[in-house]
Amino acid sequence: METTLRGVGVSHGVAIGEVRHMGTAVLEPPAKQIAAEDAEREQGRARQAVDAVAADLMARGNLAGGEAQAVLEAQAMMAQDPELMADVDRRIAVGSTAERAVYDAFAAYRELLAGAGEYLAGRVADLDDVRNRIVARLLGVPMPGVPDSDQPYVLVARDLAPADTALLDPSLVLGFVTEEGGPTSHSAILARALGVPAVVALPGAGELAEGTVVAVDGSSGDVFVNPSEERKARLEAAAAERKAALAASSGPGATADGHQVPLLANVGGPADVPAALEAGAEGVGLFRTEFLFLDDSENAPSEDKQVEAYRQVLEAFPEGRVVVRVLDAGADKPLDFLTPADEPNPALGVRGLRTLLDHPEILRTQLTALARAAEGLPVHLEVMAPMVADRRDAKAFADACRAAGLRAKFGAMVEIPSAALRARSILQEVEFLSLGTNDLAQYTFAADRQVGAVSRLQDPWQPALLDLVALSAESARAEGKSCGVCGEAASDPLLACVLTGLGVTSLSMGAASLPYVRATLAKYTLAQCERAAAAARAADSAEEARAAAQAVLSGE
Ligand code: PEP
Ligand code: MG
Image 1 (tube, rainbow, N blue to C red):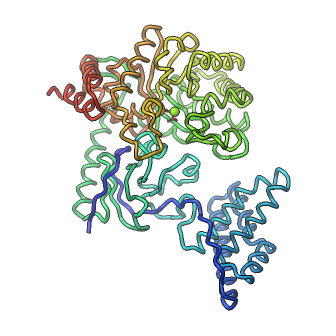
Image 2: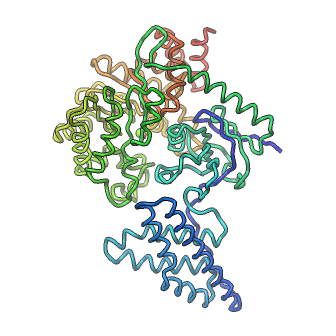
Image 3: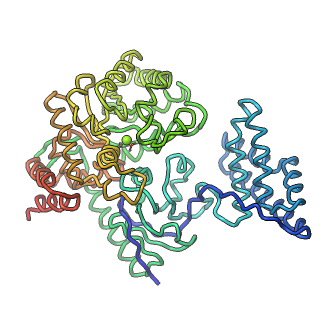
């Protein structure tokens, strides 16, 4: 029978498919004693699980080829290491269950590796992954990490972090459903980047049984469990109709009376460029470079590797604007080798520009790589820093850019309320502002963007957030400089009109949202957008602000 669950729709479209859960970290198996006569059976179970995991790793290696194959084959060999297996057998013989014996034997081996020099210590994460896989198989729970499936599926998770999703095969993911997260969580951002429908903050998502068919409506936030044939047909027809209407829109972003608002794309690397070009992006408004840093938990990517990735993105927009954000590590994007492990409040700790000022060599390498990548290209390169709090931060960043010989415009993201409140002072040091409304909402409302329970406060329609946007845009105008939005607020078509009315000079979003924003903006004049913005700011809640703007724009 069909049932309906309601969450927050954060990426448009409809996905219909089977649920596959993102496996969570494997729990420690209980230290139960088994009877002596069960030992042989447990040893057999352990061997079977080890062999199956090794075979699976080899098979995936064959499929992947290249460097990944070598890594996966080495992991398969680890799983079958004879000494490790002998230790597992010994532990079972003295009363451990198979899962507990595997868990303890790997822990002992892990300690040995961790203390055995840098190279072997670097293999600890691989060893943990092998252990988790074997224990998960023995416990009959989903494998940790992204599902092993060759059929398309709807990915269900508690929340998704960039590191979890690095291994995701986008061609298999029909949509996302998460229990936690708000409209600005990384699950939402990633879904928009992939152009797949997503619903976040869905209570009960974790209890959806593996393999259940769901229909996800990323616009309304509804998730239909076991949808009827009629429901599926209705959802599919509505999605197709909307897609056709959008395909008809093209050209640069502008209001109905020709006020230009460049529409730019948010990208995580070269892989996102084709979709941005296809959507008609006029450039890149946010290149989240941290995705380059997620491949290796121990080291930063080399300067050469960075040059290659930056150049690929810059070359794709020969005459356009490309705004590159320097590494934004920490909080929801921790990097083992940079982020302090023991912060009580990571979102309020050393993250973004603060991390880079503590590790100037990382910033220097990144800026030098950018300067090399842009050499000889006609592109308009702009470089900005995340989490700028005040003028001193802005100056430190601009000084670092100059010291690296970078020929680009330097800018500051406005993600902390202090930066919006003192935007004019920050603009004495940099040439443009870019509003990161995701973090700006988080810090304005003291509402963690990863916590579903406070997603109401993450709503970018909150009038207090609109006030800070207006203040930043007015400050930039007074200084004769530009102020764009690159947070998720820009991807909401109606809100994009309001942002334009507030004086924002460009809008940057995931490529999939771009046609929706272009089509909506083209329907209204700048004066209408300004009236909608004033009505939204006069409201007392996000819901009222949205309704007020809608009423102005639809002429009610
Ligand atoms: C933001 O905070 O709005 C932003 C664009 O940065 P990120 O989402 O990567 O933190
Ligand atoms: Mg941010």
